Image (tube, rainbow, N blue to C red; front, side, top):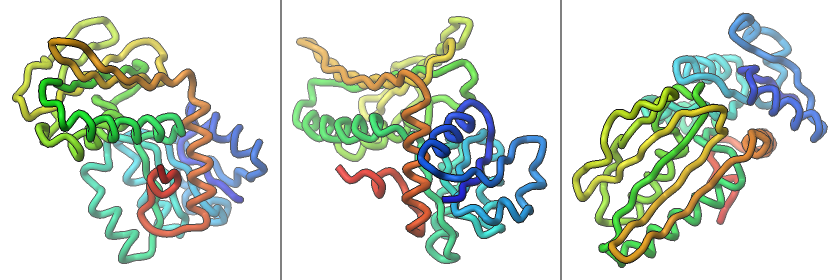
Length: 251
């Protein structure tokens, strides 16, 4: 399979290594200094482009790849809420293909399934209140993380007493804390911590007067995310439409 990389930071380099190890060819690498290469024959020859960049440019990157007739796998977060309807329309009505996920880790896919099942169980036990904390490296721009939002949405789908998530506290790299976890009974607080080079930790806590039930996913490095992105690219090369992890992994 021929792959184009959009974004060549730490994730892009990890994806490149795993893609090559699986026998794929990297035909084009686009970063901040060579955006003109979207119009190159090399880019247009790609079966799939894998896009890991920033919220401010992700939408434009996907739109440009679509203009060049290239399918996209995107792991950029912080932009999909605003553009989801348009992306779905482009895929459903204009034949474009986008595989988007807030997190490509197989472990997170399993964790997400466990999260939804636990919320369904806890729907019967209203004496437990639920909250979430996500921790990421200091370079992450969006808070809460896209993965945390996806997990929160999974809770809301299955827990009748909560109908919206709200931003909780934000712990900045210098240790200062802003915001609050105080919220209405129908709200789910999602707090964020930014420190060091943490790849990603997501903890969901159900708390009662009697005890706590806690589930956590703790990423050790970027390898799991990169492998998942390449697996998604392999899937996307053979499928069309607006795709996601529920298509790739059906639990």
